[in-house]
Length: 347
Image (cartoon, rainbow, N blue to C red; front, side, top):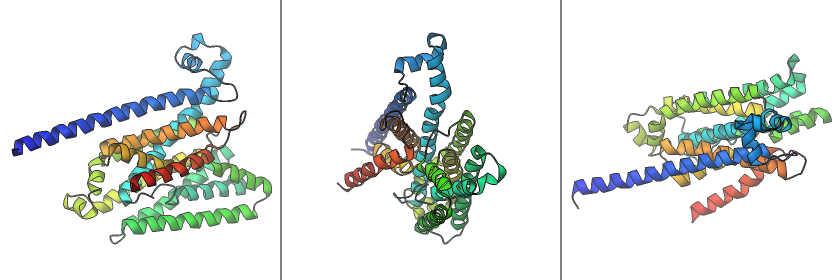
């Protein structure tokens, strides 16, 4: 075969892979729309998919009770599940890419534990005079950003490797978990119960205001992450090769950590600690689409959104008439799913 024929064959194969990846993105997006409708319809008062669609798009065809249930009660929580899933999936994908470590995620780097401690401090102190709806998310956000700032400072040193950053994140995780345990030990039973409920992770705290804040921050951060898609893809070839291609590793680390820290801290501050989304979603996306950031990042977002949306549905049906904390559901589903991924990759 001539050189021109080989190039043409390679280009044709690349185009086939790209078309397959676009079909995957479209299929996963459609699946998210289906889970959104089911999530809205699921609850103590079951609403059929037809009634949900009527309430969303043809208000005159739905009764007042259905409109109130769909638009005022369940729609914000269902949309928040998608937005938070996107944020955690994208954050996990970029942290794994940046650190070249499949175990890296906002949870394993200590950001979630820092947010939990910040929320616990706010609950323990009474919110410093602020309303709990404002003080608890604010405390969670501040401490998560403090943990992120520590990682930013480490990433700024020239001799700090990706492995050192992962170890530093694990140290932060255990540090904030120990402080959280201490706080729960000295707190009264009532305060300890409030802290524990927040740590479970729940979408019931969602309002239209914090939904729009989370959505705005997520869109802003993901837009900037897409600008470095080529550099992050080059990084998967190895740090030495990425540098030879002109990638400024220190700047890339700082930018990516700042954006993922801001995005995931905002999401966690409003819904509590929800684990395994940022760990499982990137693995699924990598198995389906490979390392090309043009497809890997959006597929991680959509997979994370679908995962959390399905967990929200399960949380409403596992105990009829009650809302099971969604953070427990993601852990129960995520652990065996993660083991399955590990075994599949081994084979």
